[in-house]
Image (cartoon, rainbow, N blue to C red; front, side, top):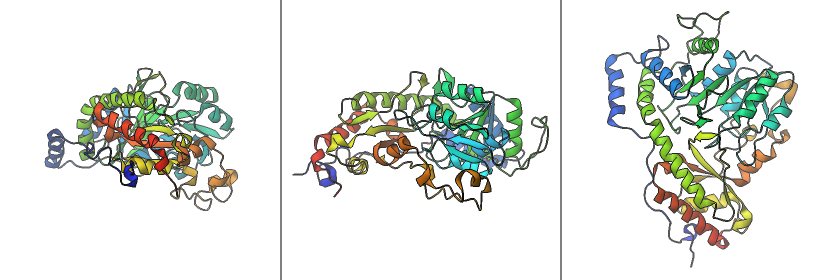
Length: 415
């Protein structure tokens, strides 16, 4: 008789996981307030709610300035432009992320250079970054991935040594801290997303953090069609840009969500810590390494490493299929290497600056990031953050399901 649910056995968990996004009567009231005010849009920029939220979010992350924008993709582009990155400049990026991380330099006609990730964190490897620097390198974009913060001490030291701009991609890290200082405030600029799946969401939206007044002014101008308005008009030169403003509805919702950020973050951290303690006892399962310098952990996605040798040789994807069948929502290919993504068909006829380094197109088969490839296709298993809004009992059920699959691995077959 089959034991695993994938083969018709009894499912480990058949209840409901917490819903996402969450909302309260306070969220509704905030939206109605904006509705009735008839002041809905992003102009004049920053508008009232956007200004208030930008200041509050920056303060919560130990940064001086917060510049709201339409989404977390354009915030990366604006950060690069504000930092003075130009056509043909090189930007070192992680390959293990959403395409926006490498797409931002492409969009401004700069050149993404992929450096591999570390095997125990899946974050940008400082040694690989150092090896990738050329006389054309202008910036580095590390991603704080899933629940883990990139080594900001090492990366900032490299940036300072070579005179580079460090832009933190913090799309996963609302409320996190490194050495008791907010994520997004360690580099020269930090970029956050408020897209629907994120830890804080208004459906869409983004924000840039910086403690540089000049960078803040340039970002504000880039958000607002290139306008230089009072409060962000003291920098030299003119800016060509577009409308990247956030609406007052989004900013109002985010102001309410910000009040819940720390309590939600703390709950997810407690549950993730408990789950990690349980998974270390299961052969073939290794939680990601949590650096002691992560003093407040945010859990956007919880990632662990899977070893097929402990599961009868079953592939990672087959294991993920079995885990889903047990009632535990999980992904294996949540991210694939950016350079192999069908959403990243970058060719020189559209983006001519890449030609010198890549030829006619960026060909993923010619890019060597073996740690990233192994994580993406064979090793990484991703659990979604709403699971960590449950309780310790549910964490024990997750571990029970994984242990069940390991115990009955003989039932798994990729045939």
